[in-house]
Image: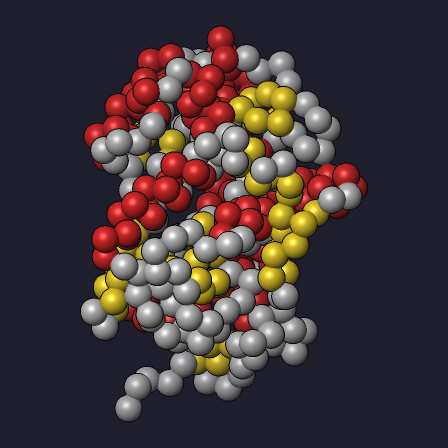
Length: 336
Protein backbone atom coordinates (compact mmCIF):
# COMPACT_ATOMS: atom_id res chain seq x y z
CA UNK A 1 0.00 0.00 0.00
CA UNK A 2 1.12 3.53 -0.75
CA UNK A 3 3.07 4.88 2.26
CA UNK A 4 1.52 8.35 1.90
CA UNK A 5 -1.96 6.86 2.11
CA UNK A 6 -1.07 4.91 5.27
CA UNK A 7 0.24 8.11 6.87
CA UNK A 8 -2.91 9.94 5.82
CA UNK A 9 -5.06 7.27 7.48
CA UNK A 10 -3.03 7.45 10.67
CA UNK A 11 -3.42 11.23 10.78
CA UNK A 12 -7.22 10.87 10.49
CA UNK A 13 -9.79 10.13 13.14
CA UNK A 14 -11.92 7.01 13.38
CA UNK A 15 -15.05 7.49 11.31
CA UNK A 16 -17.74 5.67 9.38
CA UNK A 17 -14.99 4.57 6.94
CA UNK A 18 -12.00 4.14 9.26
CA UNK A 19 -11.40 1.86 12.26
CA UNK A 20 -8.29 1.36 14.39
CA UNK A 21 -7.68 -1.97 16.16
CA UNK A 22 -4.99 -2.34 18.82
CA UNK A 23 -4.31 -5.97 17.96
CA UNK A 24 -0.84 -7.39 18.55
CA UNK A 25 -1.20 -11.15 18.20
CA UNK A 26 -4.89 -12.06 17.73
CA UNK A 27 -8.00 -11.09 15.80
CA UNK A 28 -9.74 -8.47 18.00
CA UNK A 29 -13.31 -8.79 19.20
CA UNK A 30 -16.00 -7.61 16.77
CA UNK A 31 -13.48 -7.33 13.93
CA UNK A 32 -15.53 -9.41 11.49
CA UNK A 33 -18.71 -7.55 12.44
CA UNK A 34 -16.93 -4.35 11.36
CA UNK A 35 -15.97 -5.93 8.02
CA UNK A 36 -19.60 -6.93 7.47
CA UNK A 37 -20.77 -3.39 8.33
CA UNK A 38 -18.22 -1.83 5.97
CA UNK A 39 -19.31 -4.14 3.14
CA UNK A 40 -22.94 -3.20 3.70
CA UNK A 41 -22.39 0.54 4.03
CA UNK A 42 -19.63 2.60 2.35
CA UNK A 43 -16.55 0.41 2.69
CA UNK A 44 -13.48 1.62 4.54
CA UNK A 45 -10.10 0.77 6.08
CA UNK A 46 -9.29 -1.21 9.22
CA UNK A 47 -5.80 -0.79 10.66
CA UNK A 48 -4.37 -3.47 12.98
CA UNK A 49 -1.67 -2.46 15.41
CA UNK A 50 -2.97 1.08 15.93
CA UNK A 51 -4.50 2.45 19.13
CA UNK A 52 -7.64 4.60 19.29
CA UNK A 53 -5.56 7.78 18.96
CA UNK A 54 -4.06 6.65 15.66
CA UNK A 55 -0.66 5.86 17.23
CA UNK A 56 1.06 2.75 15.81
CA UNK A 57 1.75 0.12 18.48
CA UNK A 58 2.53 -2.68 16.04
CA UNK A 59 1.58 -6.30 15.45
CA UNK A 60 3.97 -9.03 16.63
CA UNK A 61 6.13 -9.94 13.64
CA UNK A 62 5.76 -13.67 14.31
CA UNK A 63 1.96 -13.37 14.09
CA UNK A 64 1.50 -10.96 11.16
CA UNK A 65 1.40 -13.55 8.36
CA UNK A 66 -0.88 -15.82 10.36
CA UNK A 67 -3.34 -12.99 11.00
CA UNK A 68 -3.38 -12.00 7.31
CA UNK A 69 -4.03 -15.61 6.31
CA UNK A 70 -6.80 -15.99 8.90
CA UNK A 71 -8.57 -12.86 7.66
CA UNK A 72 -8.42 -13.97 4.01
CA UNK A 73 -9.65 -17.45 4.91
CA UNK A 74 -12.51 -16.32 7.17
CA UNK A 75 -13.90 -13.70 4.77
CA UNK A 76 -14.02 -16.39 2.07
CA UNK A 77 -15.77 -18.91 4.36
CA UNK A 78 -19.52 -19.23 3.75
CA UNK A 79 -19.96 -20.41 7.35
CA UNK A 80 -18.92 -16.92 8.46
CA UNK A 81 -19.96 -14.56 5.65
CA UNK A 82 -23.05 -14.96 3.50
CA UNK A 83 -22.20 -14.34 0.72
CA UNK A 84 -18.42 -14.64 1.13
CA UNK A 85 -16.20 -11.70 0.20
CA UNK A 86 -12.53 -12.59 0.22
CA UNK A 87 -10.27 -9.78 1.42
CA UNK A 88 -6.49 -9.60 1.08
CA UNK A 89 -4.84 -7.76 4.00
CA UNK A 90 -1.47 -6.09 3.42
CA UNK A 91 1.39 -5.38 5.80
CA UNK A 92 3.01 -1.99 6.18
CA UNK A 93 5.91 -0.88 8.38
CA UNK A 94 5.61 2.50 10.11
CA UNK A 95 8.28 3.71 12.51
CA UNK A 96 9.63 0.17 12.70
CA UNK A 97 6.25 -1.27 13.67
CA UNK A 98 4.27 -3.76 11.56
CA UNK A 99 0.71 -2.72 10.74
CA UNK A 100 -1.93 -4.75 8.93
CA UNK A 101 -4.26 -2.80 6.67
CA UNK A 102 -7.54 -4.33 5.58
CA UNK A 103 -9.20 -2.41 2.76
CA UNK A 104 -12.91 -3.21 2.60
CA UNK A 105 -14.80 -2.00 -0.48
CA UNK A 106 -18.49 -1.23 -0.46
CA UNK A 107 -20.20 -4.36 -1.74
CA UNK A 108 -23.03 -4.41 -4.25
CA UNK A 109 -24.69 -7.12 -2.12
CA UNK A 110 -26.02 -7.34 1.43
CA UNK A 111 -23.79 -9.52 3.63
CA UNK A 112 -24.43 -11.38 6.88
CA UNK A 113 -21.85 -12.40 9.43
CA UNK A 114 -22.87 -15.59 11.25
CA UNK A 115 -26.46 -15.01 10.17
CA UNK A 116 -26.70 -11.35 11.20
CA UNK A 117 -26.67 -8.26 8.99
CA UNK A 118 -24.49 -5.41 10.27
CA UNK A 119 -24.53 -1.78 9.19
CA UNK A 120 -22.40 1.18 10.20
CA UNK A 121 -23.12 4.69 11.34
CA UNK A 122 -21.33 7.57 13.01
CA UNK A 123 -21.36 5.71 16.35
CA UNK A 124 -19.96 2.44 14.98
CA UNK A 125 -21.40 -0.92 13.93
CA UNK A 126 -24.93 -2.05 14.69
CA UNK A 127 -27.13 -5.06 13.98
CA UNK A 128 -29.92 -4.80 11.42
CA UNK A 129 -32.73 -7.10 12.52
CA UNK A 130 -35.87 -5.73 10.89
CA UNK A 131 -36.77 -7.38 7.56
CA UNK A 132 -37.91 -3.96 6.33
CA UNK A 133 -34.54 -2.41 7.16
CA UNK A 134 -32.69 -5.24 5.41
CA UNK A 135 -34.94 -4.85 2.37
CA UNK A 136 -34.24 -1.10 2.27
CA UNK A 137 -30.50 -1.78 2.50
CA UNK A 138 -30.75 -4.24 -0.39
CA UNK A 139 -32.89 -1.90 -2.48
CA UNK A 140 -30.47 0.98 -1.92
CA UNK A 141 -27.63 -1.12 -3.29
CA UNK A 142 -29.61 -2.40 -6.26
CA UNK A 143 -30.70 1.13 -7.15
CA UNK A 144 -27.04 2.10 -7.44
CA UNK A 145 -25.34 -1.16 -8.38
CA UNK A 146 -27.38 -2.46 -11.30
CA UNK A 147 -25.00 -5.43 -11.60
CA UNK A 148 -26.38 -6.74 -8.27
CA UNK A 149 -29.86 -7.27 -9.72
CA UNK A 150 -30.88 -10.92 -9.39
CA UNK A 151 -32.09 -12.93 -12.37
CA UNK A 152 -33.89 -16.00 -10.94
CA UNK A 153 -34.02 -17.74 -14.33
CA UNK A 154 -30.34 -17.22 -15.16
CA UNK A 155 -28.60 -20.58 -14.82
CA UNK A 156 -25.00 -21.73 -14.56
CA UNK A 157 -25.58 -23.51 -17.90
CA UNK A 158 -26.04 -20.02 -19.44
CA UNK A 159 -22.43 -19.20 -18.57
CA UNK A 160 -19.36 -19.93 -20.67
CA UNK A 161 -17.08 -22.41 -18.91
CA UNK A 162 -14.06 -21.35 -21.00
CA UNK A 163 -14.42 -17.75 -19.79
CA UNK A 164 -14.76 -18.95 -16.19
CA UNK A 165 -11.58 -21.02 -16.54
CA UNK A 166 -9.80 -18.00 -18.01
CA UNK A 167 -10.72 -16.00 -14.90
CA UNK A 168 -9.41 -18.86 -12.73
CA UNK A 169 -6.10 -18.87 -14.58
CA UNK A 170 -5.73 -15.08 -14.38
CA UNK A 171 -6.37 -14.93 -10.66
CA UNK A 172 -4.13 -17.95 -10.03
CA UNK A 173 -1.24 -16.30 -11.91
CA UNK A 174 -1.73 -13.04 -10.05
CA UNK A 175 -2.24 -14.34 -6.51
CA UNK A 176 -0.66 -17.60 -5.42
CA UNK A 177 -2.88 -19.67 -3.17
CA UNK A 178 -6.13 -18.02 -4.25
CA UNK A 179 -9.00 -20.50 -3.68
CA UNK A 180 -10.78 -20.10 -7.04
CA UNK A 181 -8.68 -22.67 -8.98
CA UNK A 182 -9.60 -25.38 -6.48
CA UNK A 183 -13.34 -24.60 -6.39
CA UNK A 184 -16.00 -25.96 -8.69
CA UNK A 185 -17.99 -23.43 -10.71
CA UNK A 186 -20.89 -23.09 -8.26
CA UNK A 187 -18.58 -22.63 -5.28
CA UNK A 188 -16.46 -20.12 -7.20
CA UNK A 189 -19.53 -18.07 -8.13
CA UNK A 190 -20.67 -18.09 -4.50
CA UNK A 191 -17.20 -17.03 -3.36
CA UNK A 192 -17.31 -14.12 -5.82
CA UNK A 193 -20.78 -13.05 -4.63
CA UNK A 194 -22.23 -13.76 -8.08
CA UNK A 195 -24.48 -16.55 -6.80
CA UNK A 196 -26.24 -15.54 -3.62
CA UNK A 197 -29.55 -14.97 -1.88
CA UNK A 198 -31.45 -11.73 -2.45
CA UNK A 199 -32.37 -10.58 1.06
CA UNK A 200 -35.14 -8.36 -0.30
CA UNK A 201 -37.04 -11.26 -1.90
CA UNK A 202 -35.52 -14.38 -0.35
CA UNK A 203 -34.68 -15.73 -3.80
CA UNK A 204 -31.35 -17.33 -4.57
CA UNK A 205 -29.76 -17.04 -7.96
CA UNK A 206 -27.19 -15.45 -10.22
CA UNK A 207 -26.96 -11.69 -10.52
CA UNK A 208 -26.53 -9.55 -13.61
CA UNK A 209 -22.76 -9.32 -13.06
CA UNK A 210 -22.46 -13.10 -13.42
CA UNK A 211 -24.16 -13.01 -16.81
CA UNK A 212 -22.07 -10.09 -18.06
CA UNK A 213 -18.75 -11.42 -16.78
CA UNK A 214 -19.13 -15.07 -17.77
CA UNK A 215 -22.20 -15.36 -19.99
CA UNK A 216 -22.31 -17.04 -23.38
CA UNK A 217 -22.83 -14.67 -26.31
CA UNK A 218 -26.55 -15.37 -26.47
CA UNK A 219 -26.83 -14.80 -22.72
CA UNK A 220 -25.12 -11.40 -22.88
CA UNK A 221 -27.20 -10.44 -25.94
CA UNK A 222 -30.35 -11.19 -23.96
CA UNK A 223 -29.20 -9.23 -20.91
CA UNK A 224 -27.75 -6.31 -22.90
CA UNK A 225 -29.66 -5.79 -26.17
CA UNK A 226 -26.99 -3.36 -27.43
CA UNK A 227 -24.23 -5.98 -27.12
CA UNK A 228 -22.29 -6.53 -30.37
CA UNK A 229 -22.41 -10.29 -31.10
CA UNK A 230 -19.09 -11.71 -32.21
CA UNK A 231 -17.03 -9.11 -30.36
CA UNK A 232 -14.40 -10.27 -27.89
CA UNK A 233 -14.79 -9.30 -24.26
CA UNK A 234 -11.66 -7.72 -22.80
CA UNK A 235 -10.26 -8.86 -19.45
CA UNK A 236 -8.17 -6.20 -17.74
CA UNK A 237 -6.06 -6.94 -14.68
CA UNK A 238 -5.27 -4.16 -12.24
CA UNK A 239 -6.33 -3.01 -8.78
CA UNK A 240 -9.75 -4.22 -9.91
CA UNK A 241 -10.46 -7.12 -12.27
CA UNK A 242 -12.57 -5.67 -15.10
CA UNK A 243 -14.42 -7.01 -18.10
CA UNK A 244 -15.31 -4.73 -21.03
CA UNK A 245 -18.29 -5.76 -23.15
CA UNK A 246 -18.45 -3.89 -26.44
CA UNK A 247 -21.70 -2.39 -27.69
CA UNK A 248 -22.69 -2.06 -31.32
CA UNK A 249 -20.72 0.82 -32.92
CA UNK A 250 -23.76 2.75 -34.07
CA UNK A 251 -25.18 3.13 -30.56
CA UNK A 252 -21.97 3.67 -28.60
CA UNK A 253 -21.77 7.50 -29.10
CA UNK A 254 -25.35 7.95 -27.91
CA UNK A 255 -24.90 6.01 -24.70
CA UNK A 256 -21.41 7.28 -23.81
CA UNK A 257 -22.72 10.54 -22.35
CA UNK A 258 -25.12 8.60 -20.15
CA UNK A 259 -22.66 6.13 -18.67
CA UNK A 260 -19.59 8.37 -18.30
CA UNK A 261 -20.59 9.89 -14.87
CA UNK A 262 -20.92 6.41 -13.38
CA UNK A 263 -17.89 4.89 -15.12
CA UNK A 264 -15.26 7.63 -14.79
CA UNK A 265 -12.81 6.72 -12.03
CA UNK A 266 -10.34 9.58 -12.15
CA UNK A 267 -10.85 13.10 -10.88
CA UNK A 268 -8.62 14.74 -13.50
CA UNK A 269 -5.80 17.26 -13.02
CA UNK A 270 -7.73 20.32 -14.22
CA UNK A 271 -10.73 19.46 -12.08
CA UNK A 272 -8.51 18.93 -9.02
CA UNK A 273 -6.91 22.34 -9.54
CA UNK A 274 -10.33 24.02 -9.77
CA UNK A 275 -11.55 22.29 -6.62
CA UNK A 276 -8.46 23.16 -4.59
CA UNK A 277 -8.62 26.81 -5.62
CA UNK A 278 -12.32 26.92 -4.75
CA UNK A 279 -11.68 25.25 -1.38
CA UNK A 280 -9.07 27.76 -0.25
CA UNK A 281 -11.91 28.61 2.16
CA UNK A 282 -14.21 25.95 3.62
CA UNK A 283 -16.91 24.80 1.19
CA UNK A 284 -19.88 22.51 1.63
CA UNK A 285 -20.41 19.39 -0.43
CA UNK A 286 -23.27 21.06 -2.30
CA UNK A 287 -21.10 24.08 -3.12
CA UNK A 288 -18.38 21.88 -4.64
CA UNK A 289 -20.96 19.91 -6.63
CA UNK A 290 -22.45 23.17 -7.94
CA UNK A 291 -18.97 24.30 -8.98
CA UNK A 292 -18.49 21.12 -11.01
CA UNK A 293 -22.06 20.95 -12.28
CA UNK A 294 -22.53 17.47 -10.81
CA UNK A 295 -25.96 16.47 -9.54
CA UNK A 296 -25.30 12.79 -8.78
CA UNK A 297 -24.38 12.85 -5.06
CA UNK A 298 -23.15 9.25 -4.84
CA UNK A 299 -20.95 9.64 -7.91
CA UNK A 300 -19.45 12.84 -6.46
CA UNK A 301 -18.79 11.18 -3.10
CA UNK A 302 -17.12 8.07 -4.50
CA UNK A 303 -15.25 9.35 -7.51
CA UNK A 304 -14.24 12.85 -6.41
CA UNK A 305 -14.63 13.64 -2.72
CA UNK A 306 -13.25 10.41 -1.22
CA UNK A 307 -10.18 10.25 -3.52
CA UNK A 308 -9.30 13.87 -2.66
CA UNK A 309 -9.68 13.18 1.07
CA UNK A 310 -7.63 9.98 0.86
CA UNK A 311 -4.91 11.76 -1.10
CA UNK A 312 -4.70 14.40 1.61
CA UNK A 313 -5.62 17.24 -0.75
CA UNK A 314 -8.81 18.14 1.10
CA UNK A 315 -9.69 17.79 4.77
CA UNK A 316 -13.02 18.00 6.60
CA UNK A 317 -13.64 20.89 8.96
CA UNK A 318 -15.41 18.52 11.38
CA UNK A 319 -13.29 15.33 11.27
CA UNK A 320 -14.99 13.88 14.36
CA UNK A 321 -18.45 14.33 12.81
CA UNK A 322 -18.16 13.02 9.22
CA UNK A 323 -21.93 13.01 8.66
CA UNK A 324 -22.69 16.40 10.17
CA UNK A 325 -24.93 18.63 7.99
CA UNK A 326 -22.49 21.45 8.89
CA UNK A 327 -19.54 19.55 7.42
CA UNK A 328 -17.35 21.49 5.00
CA UNK A 329 -14.09 20.77 3.20
CA UNK A 330 -10.98 22.91 2.86
CA UNK A 331 -7.73 22.60 0.98
CA UNK A 332 -5.09 21.04 3.19
CA UNK A 333 -2.18 23.37 3.84
CA UNK A 334 1.22 22.26 2.63
CA UNK A 335 3.51 21.20 5.51
CA UNK A 336 5.89 23.97 6.59
